Length: 403
Image (cartoon, rainbow, N blue to C red):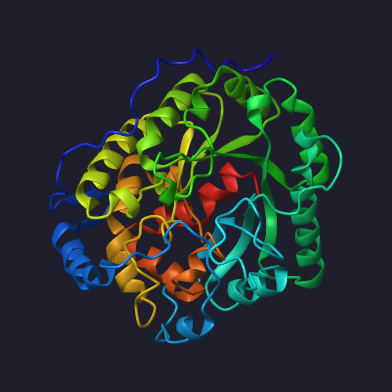
């Protein structure tokens, strides 16, 4: 019997922003205690100068190695803390479905390149590959073409296990792409993913990010994907197979995700990229309004125990760091100060048992290296207890993705 995903709610305006201002506030939870507003403002003013001219935010650009090499070396914070990276991509060439930048540069990022990053520092136990419209099958029914990406990731995982004994298990879990809007017929596609994954397939990702302004770079051509009855029937099929759903929407669409979480209480849902805050295009200069709207929605979403928050993935969308203009990459302390309000709010609302961290490499590598990114996360969680850190960095991920 399929799990019910409820009725489709009445359509509403999910694009309107609230008018609240970001306060100087304190976060208190099991030893976490920070005063954030003034700290955030200090670093915002530091970067504000660089935001006067447009940068191609929301686009995957070629990695600027010479610029990344200007980053001052940092000691690894808490080097023995075990990590599961819950979100990364791999590709031989940038998938056509992604925003392309100039489309001319080499974007190769495969096992060799990712392993160099993972092995460079921090104590990574395993990683979860997340679909990016890569390596689809060239032939066969359209619905089954994304299974090629799972075959691709499973092969890399097997190669990693064989060639890197005792090191991080790359692609230990796989989150694939399947068009859940097909409804009941998607079951056969999901079963094909499970077979192709060789025991690594853990769920599907539904990329539904839509904004009416084309500068944003949508992940869906239409709004309201999560509200459609055929999509929810597809979610029911996913749930019946014991799989999870990675959800990716922009912050002003979180109401759709709230509706989905309420309607599908048996579905494990992972909210990606901190809930999709945006800071460029029509949201330039609206930092406070975006945060207030985002926080209100995330607070409602956290009330549903089947939802987990994936922390990170804000480099090219939040636009707090203008990697296209800075003379050198920001330090981990600077990244932490800018991302702290979003990550700490999620930790406060969801708790350590419902939070996981993501590298989102190679996308985040446009503005940070592996040491800097994970150091930034560890700076944000410095006040957490040892058990909370263990949960957020590895334990919750191992449970959610069944690693």
